[in-house]
Length: 608
Image (cartoon, rainbow, N blue to C red; front, side, top):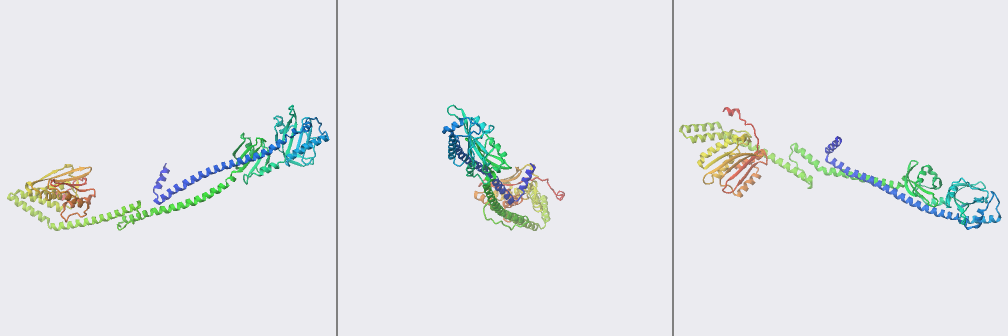
């Protein structure tokens, strides 16, 4: 399990081109190898089966030819029944070596001549054995002999004695002429019986030259390394085309099969062989054909090697093409990685060449957009810093000497109090606080409590200015007062509500300021019941807030100024949203992250 996870982790850490090459290797080489192996195995099995069937059919035809020849020999053993003199000779009682009469010699020679004539030149010997001692044997290159006696222990004789008068085929054996010459023959013997009484008369034995079977076998070719032979039921060799090259003990076991015919495999002399055999119903001899499997498969091995060579070349070319395509496909990604490293080092003057609109093309387009946005944001930050510096310079220029303004406002407040004018005292004190908050605060963030106090002081002055025309309502929870906000973002919105909503209308107006937290977002809402906006005016302002990059400080547009400052600090998801209808007021909602910090009050401010 750990090894598998390690392999998966190793594969996941590889380059994309290498992953593609490995995947293509797995998808191309392995399936083709497995498919080729199984296809060739099935092909080899089918080929062996077809060859075995062909070999079996060939042996069947060969056996049929041999049986036709053997049937002709079998009919020759029935010829004594056509000659009464021969039957009479076999019935006669004879002493061993008793001389024949001229008439008997004439009749026997005539019979033997007919046998030789019908058997053509294949028959080399004819023997007649009577049950009462008569015998007449004609051997090759010999005169007839009457002194031969049957070997009562011969296997064929025992078979005939226990049989039903059918002929018996005797396997290849040797006979010796009177001149001493030894001949190899196979024989066919039949027991002769009287048609009238059924009494056993004797035997006829016909000796045949095995070269006839050799000639029939030679007409069949199973392969260059074939072995084709015939054997009897005991496995004794009768005749073979190439019998000397096959040890009998290795094939004797095959002949004990109960089936008359079949195809099987056997390992002979350490080599796998395909063996086909057919047993003759006439002779009960089995014709066996043996061919090495390697001999049969040599053509298929050539085909296999050719296919393997072609497959290796094809797979090699496919893998080369796979490597080429993998690096070609991933080349744009490598170029994109180089460009991203340049961006990491701060070089934003790069661009990815988009040549096609596939996934890489879309990724390159997104990269170009990102770089463009980074450049734009960098420019905006740079511009914001410049504007802040300009604002600080302008503030410094406008302050000149803020202590002089504070002291002057303090003197005015003191004179007004001496004169008993409480409104002037309140106005000058609140104005002094406003100036102090606006000119003295250099913080990037302040808490909501200080921002609301600043709005309260501002509304106190405005209520004294507009008398009873303005009603201000503040709705907030004490738990929100520790939230941090950007300084001077509420007062411009309230001022905008007075100048553009209530001041331009008739009668009194109401301004409501509320704060709440919803899903970790601080929402500050300023509502008025002034003249409101038309849909066209509201759409223009919304488009300006969405698309204008200027912070609006020099145009006097408080909404745009506040919106851009919030966006620059917290991102595009925050800022101002407006709702309004003509003569039904304007609702401005500021959103920013709800961040709470402990109030920080400088020691100097505490002791001041």
